[in-house]
Length: 397
Image (cartoon, rainbow, N blue to C red; front, side):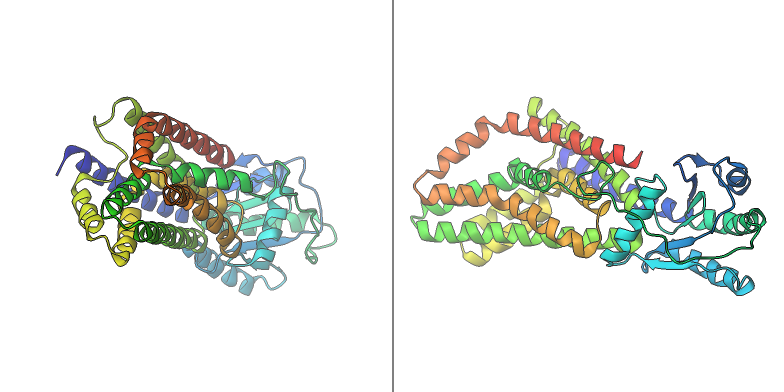
C-alpha cells in the first residue's frame, strides 16, 4: 500500500468522522435570535427578548417547523406535547418539512421575515424570537409565552397563519438555484483527471482490437454507469441530509472538504505524485485494468461503477458542494431535478469524447490533449472548489 493510498484512506475516515461529529453536535445544540437576526444567549434569551425595544404586545403566532425523520425534532415534539397538555390555551401550528414543497416555501417565508438566511429544524418562530434547536425550545418557550401574555392586555390570542410575500428566486435572499451554475459545475467536474483518463484508456484499448462499433457502445455504457452511480449516490446523500435535518452541519463539512480538495488539486498541478493526491488509489488501478482488458459491454458497465466508487476523492469536492447548495434551498422532490441536470452535465464531456472518436478523432490524440492540459484543468478545478466553499460559508455565516 502506497503512502498516498494510506493518506487517502485516513482522509476519508477523518471526513466521515467529522460529518458524524458535526451532525451529532447539531442534534444537541441550538440558538436563539431576535427577529432582526441578532443572536442572543440561550440561557437568558427570554429576558433579553421581552426587554427588547421591538418586543411589543401583539397577536402572537407560534409556528413550529420540523422534519419527520429528525431525531432532535422528535425530542422537541415530545416536549411540546407535554407542554400543551398542561397549557391547553396555547396553540402551536405544526409544519412538517419532509418532502413538502408547500411547507418548504412557507418555511422560506418565515426565514425571510425573521432575517434568517438559514435555520435548522426543529425551530419555532414566535413574536420577536426564533428558537432554533431542541434545547432552545425547551428553555425559552414557556417564559416567552408567559411574558407575551403579560404584555398583551387582552389576553393571549392565537390567530391563523399570517401571509408572507416569498422572496423571488433571483433576489439575494431567494431560494432559487442558478441552472447555469449547476451545469457549469457538472461540466467542470466531468473533465476531472480520473473518469476522463479511464474512458480514454478504454477507448484506446478497444480501438486496438479493431472494433469501432464496440468501442462506441462500450463508451456509452461506461458513461451511463458513471451517471447512474453518481446520481443514485447523490439522491441517497441528499435524502439523508433532508430527513435528518442536518443541512447546516453537512454544508459546513462540504465547504471544508471543498477547501481541502481544492488545495490538493492545485498541489497536484504543480507537484504531481508528491504527498497525498486526488486520484484513483494505486491499489485499485489493477482492478480497473482487468475490466478494461475484458473488453465486453457488461465489463464496461461494471468499470463505470468501479470508477465512480474509486474516484470519489477526485470528484467529491465539487459534488458535495453542489449537494450542500441544493439542500439549503429545496426539498427532496425539488432537488431531484437539479441532481439530474448536474449529473447529465457531469457525463457530457465523456459523451463528447465518444462522439469525437466515433467521427474519426484518434483516442490517442485525446489522451495527448488530456496530458498536455492536465495542470490547467487541475488549477481551474481547484479554484472552483474554493469558489463553492466560499459561497457555502457565506450562506452559513
